[in-house]
Length: 377
Image (cartoon, rainbow, N blue to C red; front, side):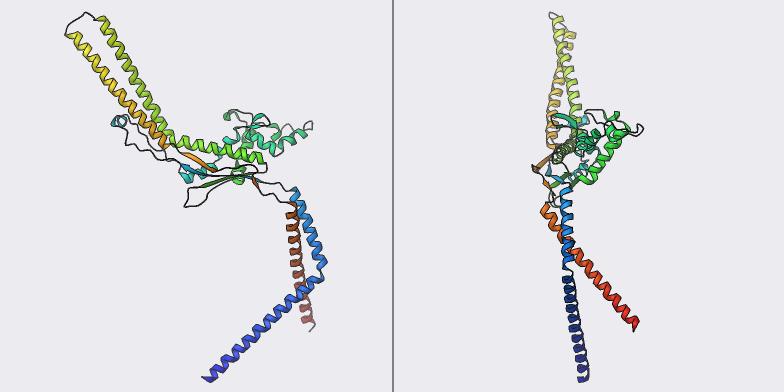
């Protein structure tokens, strides 16, 4: 038993020596590389200066991206059809709920191509004139300015460019040319993929965040506001379309009953004038029929008005709304890179990369010298 303990002790002592030896080697290696880097300090400084200059140039030429952010929630309660009487059921009407879009689906609705396209074709005020958002975007991207510079220069008449295409206000969508469709599709697709972000803030919360980013601050704010309005209106119209259709149908039926009731009033007045001094059973029966029709139509019309009010109340309950909690205000948040920050980041990155490169070069030289020494032996 004692021999086994002696063996284990020797092994442990050996491991400890190896561990101490390896730590010494690591410390010696680190010290050697630090001294080697210190010998090349002016090279590292030069790399840092070059990196700082590159960072300054990047910060100066980089386009700033502005972000308009909305925090909103979806409100609205589901209607109840308990207040509607049996008459509306006989007429195949009811309040109904249009659940085509739930709260989560609104996030996907925000990024739908159709609504982005509709927003791009909607009007916006620019320098006192009303233009479409897509024209505003082309101006912000300097496309229209480049087109003015090209005025008078020779152009291939067979090639259609953005400079040859305009998007006037209120042009019917069906009348768009192939070039207009192509440009609109590309811009809407780019906005959908790169500029628009819609997320739920927390799975346990109903708060949602919508952001739109663009290099022009005014365009970012105006477009985000118009786009969210389009989404909100589309969402409300879709959710309430069935209830509105029911109200319209019920109103038509109520108006029809009212017209028949008015006709009965006219018939009674005409019959009374024509048979003022008449007597007999036939006169009494005819008059009783007219009065019965008036009573039935009056009761029916009164009941329909009650149900019509219930339908309108259900519509008010069913109508959802997008409640904006936080909305963007000037100045918008941005990722502007200041010149000092660019110099510091570029200088640090240049110095760090130069140090890594020098260390890699030192290791390579050591390995090469070691291999040459082994070959000579």
